[in-house]
Image 1 (cartoon, rainbow, N blue to C red):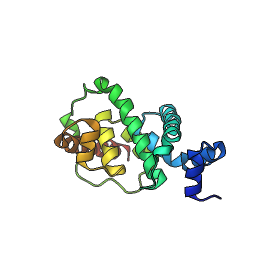
Image 2: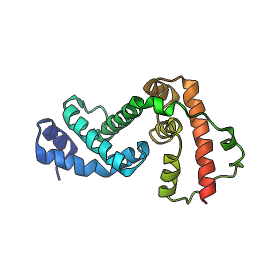
Image 3: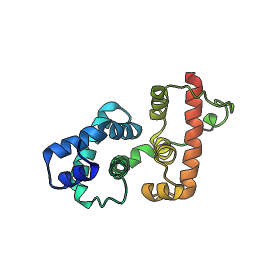
Length: 177
């Protein structure tokens, strides 16, 4: 097995075997990122392919200031957000339905042993504006300031969407128990 530095160096030199090794090493992790931002597996596979193309065509700009998988994850997230941004108008009709805020969720914590499949399915049922902010904040660890900048919204909107998204997700998970 070659070192990560050597793998990156060889990828920068367009070594096909190194590119394949990079793909194989991180495909599962990047697919998980794609699944969080896509409604279905086919869209996630398309995003995975587009993301790896972008990684391989941009790898010369990788400076090594972070881990390669962290850098790659940012590329995949940005591609997913750009895809959503292109179709932004189709999501603008969603308004928060207050019935999700309290009526369906009585404040009891959701069981810790819910299967990941169930959580992902419930997350994918959320309107895109809430799903995206939940992913960026809770899973990708971005701040509201970073989310606001990426999505072109205010920090307050980011906080509001996170709160509403959590309420809706908790309500959906409670119903699936």
